[in-house]
Length: 587
Image (cartoon, rainbow, N blue to C red; front, side):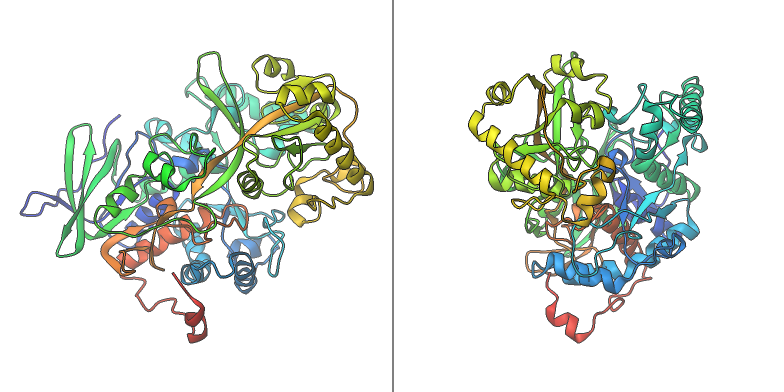
């Protein structure tokens, strides 16, 4: 694959020269590069790997931005004031108010400009609730989903440049399927509508495979990444692949460029307006994981293995301040896994398809429940970490497995026996046998089932409040016939248990920054010429997880703000808060 050409500008000292150098081609970095180019800057985007997208490409792509015009178009208009009240309730006094205010005041403009001037298109979900209840919480409108993208619009070379989704989420070896389409594909002959959906999706995929390695119908995070790449190509932004940042160039206390490392060796680029770090956050950085992450969470991350915290390393080397992330250094996902015959690790993030459904519960090493299983993936995993339930086991009966599946076992449980043989799920005829297999107290497990079944009968989970929140009920099953869409009885065996462990899907810890994305030094002062966005910038939510897409939302908005500030279109006084808000704002 050919490398994009660099601008020919050169400084007298031999450094190639641009206005803005962006390091990292995830959602934040691509947005920063794209918007900077729209502002007329001479930009180059350097990506460490041969593909764009980073963690975004394997994500659901949902992007949380309150108060956009898209919420109005969807008929669920959202209020920034409501979102502000919600975040004040969720994040409380953990700090970061100034950055959150910047995010809230710029979100609408950022999404509107991307929608109007680029091919980055979203649609607001009418029903996709925030993850926590509270003042100002929304049921719909804030979660923006990327509109599907036809990968054939990219050149063949650029289509290969889009990092594919996790293999576990691809059907037939390379076909993307939306959540609402799964039912039709699993039961194609149940109705004419199901058959038509199946023929359209599978037929299109088969045609794709005549020319491409995988399907060109791109959804979710893959659609967002492809749309950003398509827009960057239209804007003629040069992209240097297989080129990572190794060192920042500092002159008189100002960052004036960076040393990049590629296949042809070091490359020095001067940047008149600054350098943007968007390299994917902590992710696989061993030193930072050992320093920040709790025991039981350090061995596996959901980001690409090439995300090794390069942005944090080069920034801290020149005196940048690094924040621990507040409540948590990372945002977590409970994941199950097994080794394939070829030795590779198959990993399944338990997002929404099983944990909230009636008839499943989770136990710690003693055989007792420890958390509301229907809470968000982050809060479930935080419960694991807080109680030491690493690993925990999801437990269900045969009826649940047939109806809903679990993890990589799909509804209908057609691959159940293969997964039992692979060691992915444990099967036992009795609860006593199951307790022995997962090494917990049989009496404790039996008592847990008895207590859970009482809650299912009454519809009230007095221990953990399962089914009491909006998001719990949204992800449950109202058609199950029970009093609570998240509670159902555990009946006759056989019984199944699946081990889950927290894996970080994104960083909360990161470089300290201000409301313009400028990286701060140890004294809290901006380092001139150095910006950060995406996971390289410490989370503005301070280790909490307010709703779906609260990683990608700030990544895009701060990518936009960084570019605007570098271009002089967002002055230091822009978005200033009232005196009252300033008094309560902290970094």
